[in-house]
Image (cartoon, rainbow, N blue to C red; front, side, top):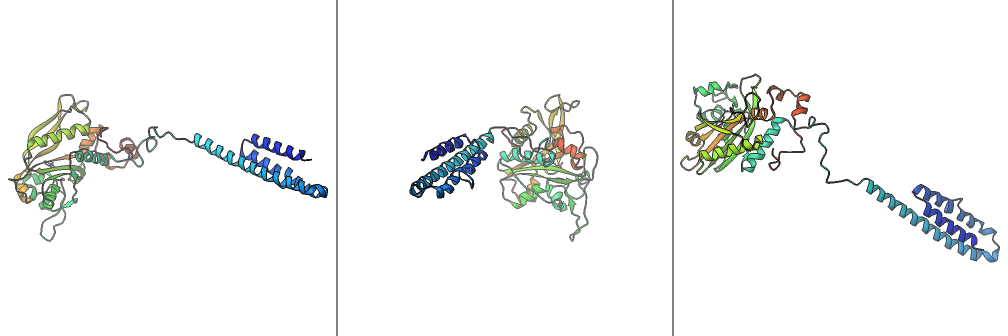
Length: 360
Ligand code: PHE
């Protein structure tokens, strides 16, 4: 008499086991305990069962119903778990894969401008030597741009700088667009006690315009003030910097006597290159790359530093110039033209900042 129930139990179990996904599972569920499912049909037929068998039959049907509902639910849980497993397996990511280039196809949109990139590189290299970054304003007093740096009125160096002057202030003196980053030497010495170790990247201005000069350009100044600082420190520091920046471990570096009003002695620094091919590091020719020297005692005195106790060195170089040399750029003007083709070619990846261990 319960043969039909045993058959339903067995067939439902088989159908559930065969249901490979939730769609097939749902068909089994509907066909069994849905509105017109087989079990539902048997329950509905209970009324037609003779009264003396009805109680027993009803109890058996209810047990079967509970059993089948539990089996159907268990199969759903198993199928959902299997689906999740499959998805996790197919979407697994390999965190050891190298990153894709960003942005795709180059570093144009969102890329780092080569001037900014060079400043990041300078900061990384000098930062590792214990320098911090100092800044100053573009509009300077005549005193800080010139006089404090031992360039008095009527000094010929004032003419060399092709200075942009602004209208005179209350003191009758004309402020200038700073012609070099050197006034930040004075600002730093006036603003803090030695020892000092700063670099000063920033905009500078001179009335000059051709393929290698722009009225606005960038320099980086360096200043070290401490006890017992010698020319040897200057040379070691700059040789290390130039070799790290250009990525040439044996780059030839030459120090040549020169003149700046604010350093004594003063030296131009040249690096070895091949004039014909533009290749750096070999070829037997020399290229002037920056100015440097021991800070003049009069500059120290102007900035309130006792030259008997403290010595130092300073240097200044053009950021466009070293960037052009490093990347073989022939012309300076595109730096400021925002031509996307040029930017895509030269911009740096924002997600790959300079790293000393990998070379800047
Ligand atoms: N200020 C100098 C220039 O603009 C560079 C320089 C800086 C030289 C510091 C010596 C020391 O040419």
